[in-house]
Length: 314
Image 1 (spheres, rainbow, N blue to C red):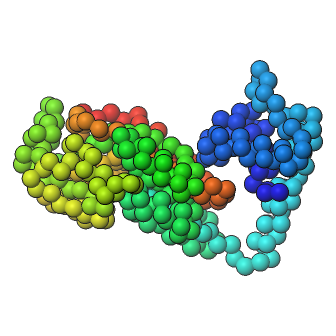
Image 2 (image 1 turned 90 degrees about the vertical axis):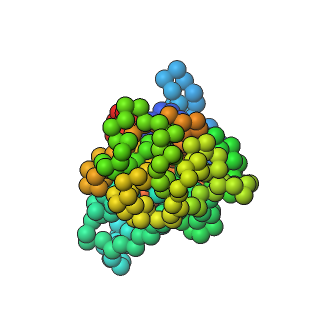
Image 3 (image 1 turned 180 degrees about the horizontal axis):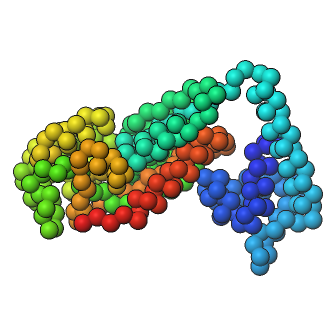
């Protein structure tokens, strides 16, 4: 029996809801339902039943859940013994993420919060969505975050299914224009894409690909690849250096944390363009169990997203 299924059942009992439990476990609801049905078939009992008060355990289910909690408690105890008498505990993680400032900010805060008495072996890479999918499915990364335009969602969801990956939508957002405070359009009442592409320099990530096509995400953006002057980059440090240094430079990006903009002397503005809806989506291998550090990182991401969602932009 897979012990992770015990944790699934305990979470459903706690929340009285399969959908809420799935959200807390960062997994798709159908996959959680399938796991519980498989567990019930293995045990030849019915663990839960639907009632007006939500999902509640049956009589047999209550007995099973008592045993499940005891089993998990014993496993946790054995892990603690291993920490005390074994080698120094090492926090390990391999994470693949997009070039998003709010994500890197949260990652840094999560690392800063790790107990200094513990060892640390953490790897993170900022890359495009296609590479992240390969990293998680084939290169033993614990989980990843992919970013795509909603207009291309079908391609990505099909590809995730093909690679046997689970996913959880973090949020949907509109990209904003990032520029420095000396940009000539900084005080325009309504920022115009025509004005930007006429005399600006667009900073673009050069390796964003979507599955099943040889075209880049940028080719599907009606508001990109229109500037006469473009700079393609592959890492985040240079993009900010360009934006800070070159007055006419601008870039489309997810909402930035306030502290990042202030420290660099940048500003974000709204600019109405077609197909400007994006999603950041958490992905992991089916059956993978997220570590406590993974969960802390994801919980912090959700908190940061709430802050960004409550901001207003002109």
